Image (cartoon, rainbow, N blue to C red):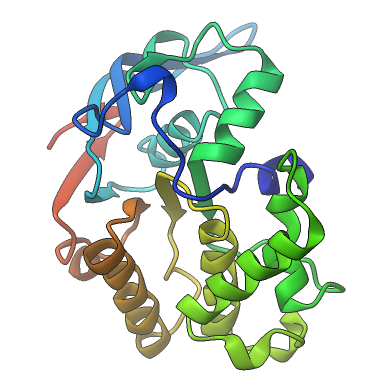
Length: 246
């Protein structure tokens, strides 16, 4: 859990080694992911080529088991491809150590999970602060201010002292989005962010994500089963049996 939460992020970070805004945030080239047991080989992803540009809102769709979650794990640098390359800000990351990958995730990538992954015995503001505990050189005062600013952005300034169990599902997802935003990531990866919500709450969360993208320029990749929500984004990428079909 701590390793996942350590992956959310900082003030809008600068591109690596002088990269410019013209470079994509993420680029996956000829990606394959194969899971091998003694008797079975399962191809989760096959020859995937995908570029995510700054400021895009991209939806990833496909039936269960088509490779969407595997793709998100690779994009979030939580897993490694069997073959192919992953670039962040124009820099290939396969040669990075585990520590370097963790630092890169913490600086560049924010995660929003379907099941929120909030810590029940921490207050809302403390939950949002958790990823920033891994940020070198950041003091408690700055962490708290960033958390408060992020909660204000998602409309939860009045709930900072509440605990997750005191919130609705939509409010908990807003806390999860604030946690992803607190460090200013270059990209947010959202895994079924409306999947556990009713239609009204789902619309609220989708409107929030669209606002963050259109008004604040946050780059978002969202895995979803909801065609209606996906069509509100700038681009829909479809998968079937591990292959990209659109």
